[in-house]
Image (cartoon, rainbow, N blue to C red; front, side):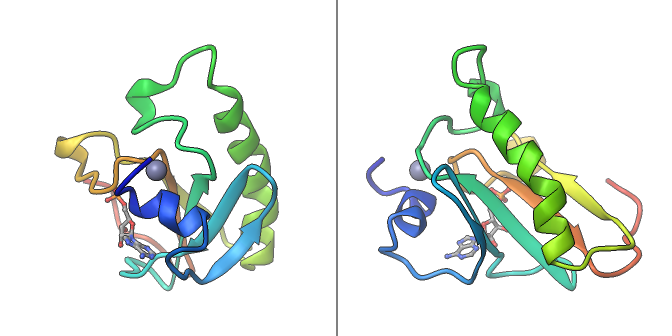
Length: 113
Ligand code: AMP
Ligand code: ZN
């Protein structure tokens, strides 16, 4: 999709610090980390702007992302655990309208808002 920063990262038009990649998804370090380990996981295709656009027809990518999260967390050595975050919409502070999930960890995280 035009003017989507995560589509540009997926296409290699904007550089990213990759931690995992396969044919369907990409995981890279967040440019403004909110924890010692902060990784963003995106589908390479712009399947949805947010979780609100997930349907029975396109949910397979969410399943694939969730199946990859344990191995990404293991590669990141998040042995003490981690938090998975999906900001959906303005009240959640979503800034990029390309479906994505955050993995946060590397310390004992505070309580959620
Ligand atoms: P959200 O607020 O859930 O929409 O998350 C978007 C995230 O993308 C934010 O945490 C940003 O710091 C991150 N971000 C934006 N641009 C880049 C970039 N070029 N490389 C890595 N992370 C980015
Ligand atoms: Zn996109």
